[in-house]
Length: 101
Image (spheres, rainbow, N blue to C red):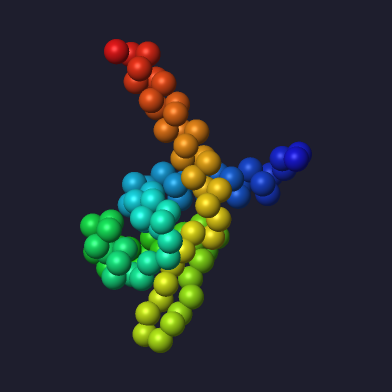
């Protein structure tokens, strides 16, 4: 795929979103399946207001999908492929750490 300015901007915007540890905790919590906001508060340690802001941004950039059922909103990963990037970065961090021992 040939990159152009629009793609560069989209990629940079998504990396910026992934640069926040709280949002990474949310994505990691959703790795095993969909959760409600209340469940995510418990799993991430974020307060509800902060969590809601993060979820709104993650949803706007297609990292998470949501569905409403009764009074609850359920969130899930829009695509598990986000963890391919996580795994690459984790391997690089582990490799670097082992080289500096």
